[in-house]
Image 1: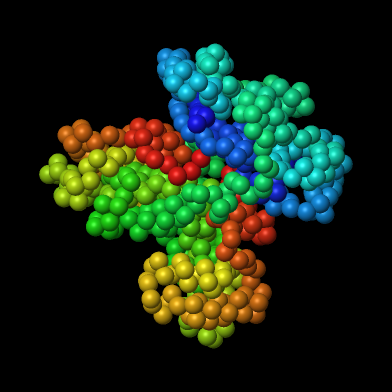
Image 2 (image 1 turned 45 degrees about the vertical axis):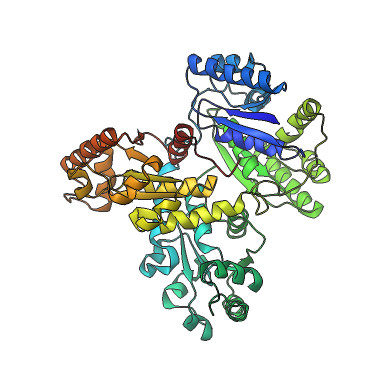
Amino acid sequence: MRTAFYISDGTAITAEVFGHALLTLFPAQFEHVTIPFVETSDMAEQVKQRINDRYKTTGQRPLIFQTFVDDALRQIINSSNGICYDFLNTFVEPIQRELGVAPVPKTHRTHSIHEKTYDFRIDAVNYALANDDGSNLKNFDQADIILVGVSRSGKTPTSLYLALQYGIKAANYPFVEEDMEQLRLPEMLKRNKAKLFGLTITPERLSQIREQRRANSRYASLRQCQLELAEVENLYLHEQIPYLNSTHLSIEEISAKIIAKTGLKRHKY
Amino acid sequence: MRTAFYISDGTAITAEVFGHALLTLFPAQFEHVTIPFVETSDMAEQVKQRINDRYKTTGQRPLIFQTFVDDALRQIINSSNGICYDFLNTFVEPIQRELGVAPVPKTHRTHSIHEKTYDFRIDAVNYALANDDGSNLKNFDQADIILVGVSRSGKTPTSLYLALQYGIKAANYPFVEEDMEQLRLPEMLKRNKAKLFGLTITPERLSQIREQRRANSRYASLRQCQLELAEVENLYLHEQIPYLNSTHLSIEEISAKIIAKTGLKRHKY
């Protein structure tokens, strides 16, 4: 099996995203090796040795996705037996030409605590945790967005993702039977109606998810899921709450769609 | 100000990471516009119009970071007045040559629910939430890792990040005074000692963070923070628990370091 190395003087997250986007285009299996924080020439020499050893044992040149900012470190890796794909170096020059500005190479400029938006993200995570599952209605005034939906429709992981990745203060509120039967919103939601965003899901999938939680319960039964979802979708229409169906979407996709639909301000690029 | 567009037929997360890694090298300000889920030629034409309008109003050609897999859609964006940087297209051909395998273009192959590891990640998020803050000692046997440390040393956001990004089941346990005074681990941690990873932080930073929570309390006082941290670092040494100092690190950096140090198996690339 071919080995793919993701190497950087930082977290190597960018190198992983870069390599992953490319390798998933190919119908082939890879062994993945991530090596972050390669910050000295001694460390870079050791990594070069690992690459060369891998070449020797497998007979195939490893693919190297690297995002070094430090030129000397990059050269060491480039001198290995791996094949280096270096998107920073490839694109810096044309961008420099277009901008008419020279780059100022610095490490740890991405994914670091020094990013201007870092504190927003940590505050938002704390907010999302404290306001998960309708636990703190009185804080809803501070929310950037309030996700609503029936139990297990994807609100919690989506709130956390919005907070962690984008610094968005996302609260969430699970509708209880009382809200739905009366087809009305609790007072605290009504006050913040412009912030509401609904999630829905197919009854079949919801029932499956709930079964894992409480097998053979009324809560997990298809009939109960059908009832709750019909009511909640009625409520969305009746109150004109924007919503989407999460059944076939990942939390990344749900989050990207919510941001695109609402125009929410994000705190990370 | 120059505008940077991040455009894709998927979430555009890859396009953002790609463009961000490049633009942060330049000492310049940009206006960032992300447009995900551009899935039809009509939508692509609308985006092209937005790019051209931006060029007209600013007099500067927008920078376009795009990751279309669909060739027809890419062509439409390429025909705009923006300057397109396309790392997929740039690197696919050399990788294809090296692998001797043709790419099979498909959208939604990254950041989608169809990734093999998606369910791991959702399970891990639920696990991290249920086992936050020592709330469920009896589940520690199921953990992949148990973060330990004093209150507010960064355990919770790190657990959530490890779960969300890497599908790692991360529990966390805040030491209470009793544990520390006696310099001993609770039984449930002792049983899972190989899974423990400690966090520490400088007393000054800890006191600052705690002040935001409970201003002017004993809990937040520098003296109390110094005491607790000295005790907890003693405990790490005494019990030979690997640990790191989170003071100057982002959750991405803490997570990458923990994975590199422990060799934890991740469920995402």
